[in-house]
Length: 461
DNA sequence: TTTGAAATAT
DNA sequence: CATATTTCAA
Figure 1 (cartoon, rainbow, N blue to C red):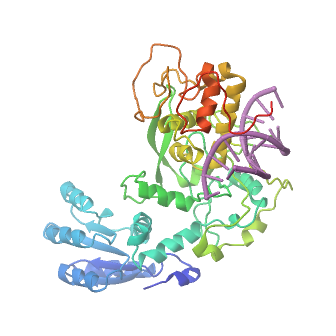
Figure 2 (figure 1 turned 135 degrees about the vertical axis):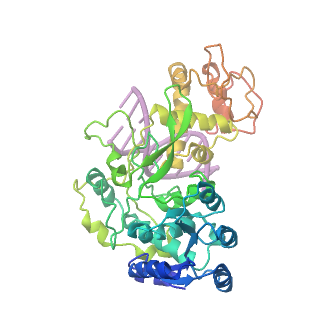
Figure 3 (figure 1 turned 60 degrees about the horizontal axis):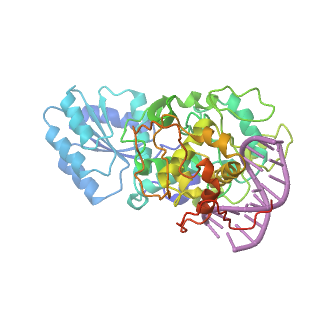
């Protein structure tokens, strides 16, 4: 092993020490590539035929981080076999031939990338990306001994120093956000913590960390995303990142689009909502970043964090607000909320589940709970107006429940048109808001008693 | 630990 | 007042 988890701190120049298996029949150019890679501090083992290579990886499983395999017209079969055998090893195909079907087959068999020769330095230098990609896509249990340290390292690099100290940081985050636009290039000791996070239109800046249990740091988010397959199978490792974002279109339907975000510009999109802020441009409300105050749950690498960071960013306002910034419940955000609730049905519509369904990064369960409560109260006080605002004109997800609203209905009803203008969210028919309150409070209680008010606790009026 | 309601803050 | 967060008891 090049590096164990304990070596993390010592792993200064990240790609350094990654072990590369080079399978290439042409010894001369193999040597060339090898030496180039070694200049970049990769550790290269050259194998000249398939059998040796396969033996190497089977004898010492986990002893390579990445493989580079040359495919030619003659050895395709062998290459395919390699790919099939070495599924766990990120494998980069290199070739002098340009055969689409060969390329496709390689990729289909799991090749990480197909590179045309000659190989540029950049291509070679960046092969580590596939290792990281692999490390993050593999299930925790599948992480080999060689992959685990990689992941840990990357995690530690992405880890935010700011999470230990509280309040001070988020003001600086704001200032940073405006200016940090291109801080992505030279990361060494101060590794970027602005790793571009996926963002939704509502949440233009994807870096909001909450301090409670809902906190998902970027790393976790990425991992999570990978596990859910949201990001798709894209193995291409580029300098840009593909993000899947949800976009609310004008007709109120939720569409998913993939956008390509250049990491260097992502942050410029960040917008912080603050009372004095120069008007947030319309397009985006935004969640804002938070002070981190309590424990950091980043067990394994907690000591990696960089305490200097805090002092780097004096709090310009001297303001010590521990209070979280408000979440701006934009119509779009609210829409997602409503849809989540509808999908769940009233029985299941509890904050944590709603939160799950909403899939809005940075939003906390508390936010959702609060919103839930608030909306319910509103409903109680001013049912009419509010209800109107809740409805989604062309969105047929909503149903009218003339009778007892029971939950069991399919999650989506894409184009179900209603001709009535009596659209009310399942939980909130204006004339029944009291009952609804009762129902929300007591999911198990199914009898519907119009006009009877229930509440869990006495309501001081 | 999570929830809904109540208390507060902005 | 509106609307969010925080607190708190269950």
